[in-house]
Image 1: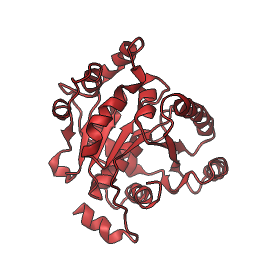
Image 2: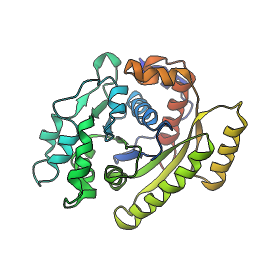
Image 3: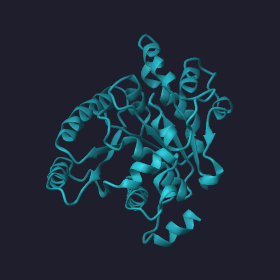
Length: 284
């Protein structure tokens, strides 16, 4: 039903990629709409009938909670990443037991998730002296990627080994940027990290785009931040802007993506527009 609704809204043909694509949603600053973007972008791809895997690699597990997983699972991303330490342990059959379908009542049959939990925090310590510590997630995705068209990774709001794993495994990065002054300072730090990963671990990593979030068109600061971002990220800022929206803030407490909470909301329309923008462009 949702796919039909949005197909009627679509004005342009949506691309049908043959190669799987892994997108990291990343910003080391918290509260910028990172998890909101990861969850809703993944849900939008699923609504467009793109087989999508959402990976929650944040120990806070907010993406898992936002999609209805409120209890600690017997196995989650911690076990999945631990399996990749030993060659041959992380098979598709073994990892399939950790991957979870989204509740069928949500009508998102194209969306799966590897959930997280606070227990993931201990992996950071375990990775310090581990071999190939930056490539655990990359190994995991290589096993799974051909079963999906899109893989969305919700990275932690910090620059740690889990974030480095995320950037090493990704094809591209979407950077949510809140419409406030200090957000631009945080982006500069993230860009330095991305450059280091490109130079040392993942030369094919690209910046898909910076995404303006929590925008208030009535606020002059939002306009200043928007203008500054577009000036410094020429050609790498999404046309879509995510507004400050009550429904976006409410949806996670109901364990639903915003388009399943209120399909008519401004937040729902904005994330569907973002998904279409990524699907329709040559970079998407």
